[in-house]
Length: 419
Image (cartoon, rainbow, N blue to C red):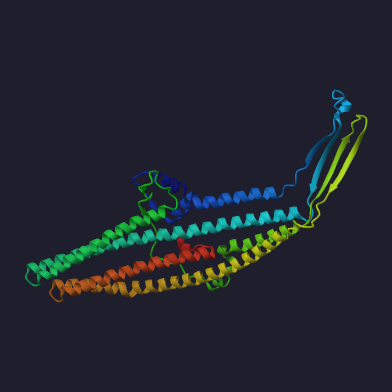
């Protein structure tokens, strides 16, 4: 695996890569190089620092005070006046430090969940883009097959025209149909190039010149495009809320907001400051010990605004969790339905429609060669076959896209998406 990843990085820097890309390698490259995932990792590390800072205790304060100075005796020790040295230490009351650490830890949990959500989002994007490349490769191959089919039809029409058995108009129609198929082949090649670049954009940096000339970093994608995963089980659908990482960030944000609300409640209690020092009088032989206590009186500012704001923010986080659950439930149901529909369409296309269309196209072409069919029958059969192939690729693309969305919501990958 490491060798393949290294070769992929090397290929990204060469103008003509010669590597074949698997889904596993594409995922490894994206997880290593995607800047969005790196940003989420940095955020989790930053939250570790905030937890460390939240556990720190207040620093003590050292103060010095000198009062008075005798100008007549400026050169004597007695003329220095009174000097006071004092050390003060704030004492947090009301459980502030514990509440502050708890809020910071919940923030770290949110960052960790966001990192996992970002990873799942990237995983789904890469899987979708990878299968788009596979579909585009298959579409180009089928377009090339269709071009060969159109050429054979043109050759058959040309032979019939030379033999005087059909009108030259049929040959013109055949050449026009062949030109249209070639146009579709060119469009398929362009779509494949775009799909390859969209996939490689998950790990390749933009070209230094900014002119979009960076290569995709691989020559072709390798994978089994024809296999769609099974829809999730009834048990997974029933318990998806409890196990879905997509909801974890919103759920932990509720816990963080509650912790912040508790912190603001704790901040209502004033802090006590204890002071201890020494006071030396103008007479050097006289000194006094100074002990002091300082406690703010919460007469005007009782932190009531911050408490109210924190409580409403906690309520907002709860509402956002409910909204996220509703949205994801709708997305999950829609994706499951799309996956089931795609699997059903593929079964019908493979077992009935495609074989029948292929057989009808061959029969029409051979019948035209022997004078049993009109050329319009050949064109209709050829068009029907091309449409069936397009439906087949569309069903594959829709199915893999729906499967990737299901994996993102449920938080686990299907077996066939881990080659």
